[in-house]
Length: 148
Ligand code: TYD
Image (tube, rainbow, N blue to C red; front, side):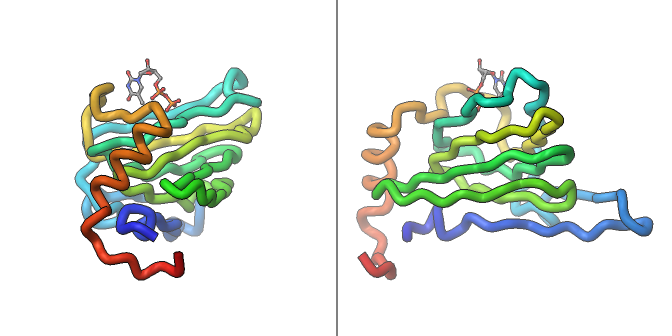
């Protein structure tokens, strides 16, 4: 597994005030300084697949603060992993250079995303074959500890 995918992790946040309260601090609870927040909500997302891209610079933390959705990651070998987000105090951390797809949005889903970068469409890789070329190039000199 390459260094980027090895960094993917679920984050569990404590609920304060007897529940119903979650705090997120940049560089403490998430591994970056938060520069941008966006959220994806509304019935228009039901049945759609969002994402389908990788980012050269942006790292993300995704929370379903309401409802649920799934995040699928695909690596350069086509290996898929699926994570369900369905709790307001749980998130997934995605390092840069991870191919991601968000789908299976519930009707009430509110997917909140935190990131370390301002929006810049040039740092998005939207073609899977290009993503494979770039990540192979970035990781070709690192030693593999996987079982390939
Ligand atoms: P896109 O990245 O394709 O969304 P998703 O990953 O959720 O499928 O972006 C959709 C549109 O919104 C595109 O025109 C770019 C714009 N956009 C912004 O202006 N700012 C942002 O922070 C994001 C994520 C997208």
